[in-house]
Image: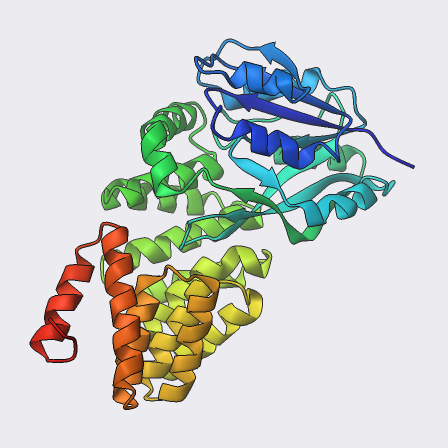
Length: 399
């Protein structure tokens, strides 16, 4: 039995990425609904060429309102929601088709890979759910269906929310280039501030706005919002995680190590999927390393690579720790694995060169140093020139 699924999207000026997004779901969905909120490029034409049904919606700084309009147009039994800067991973299509046939599932959480993110490489999103008029998005920004699902389950407790263990979506919306090109930060801050003024008790909104302030170095505002959010005792595990994770970041910046450690530990203890907690594991490990607690740091970084054996940053941090422990052959292996997974990671080449030099392999070290210098230069980082000058001054690299 094939259960009909509707794709529902809202878009604006997404010509660069929309075709890839739509192509990724065409074998899964029975219809594609694209609601345009004011595009001035050829987004609409791209959607129509792909076979989508296009509708227009007047934008007024409310993502939930636009999304709910898209839901109202869906005819399928289930709905999957994507953004234009996301693609569906082909391997999960059979898993989704199996999930929507389960009679007691009302929604399925999807694991999303945040491409380009070093702090939080994975997130959990509620994007696959039954087509019911009482399932609706709420909040003007970072909109969710979670509240309406909770209300339904209170009245109809037989419903269950499932999760797919495999990565379902790949997201490029939070890479630095995309954020800068769309002035995303200013838009997020404006809408979140307005929404939080209307709902000051909303811990989720407070945590999201605090994260923006923290990223901009406005620590006083961030701390106030995070403390306020924590005081509401939010029940959602991912909200708890975000609050503690960002408090850990904030206290680390203030060099309040014990407070930072406490909140990272509390973040790790939340009942969230381990992949979504990689940032807390990594930052706590780095905190231990900076404090000289190298054995604890090594243990955490080994946990990180067990949770995600494909994340280059985990192997890189393990390599740094093994180098500090003077376990040089093991450090070489960790750096080599990081480079296999992320060949353009300049810092991994640089540090592998240092370890190889200590082991007496100067030719190997020079090869990786040259690669690091080249990568830094390609990435526009001044570190390349600095590294080259230091190595030449030490006589470790030809002029």
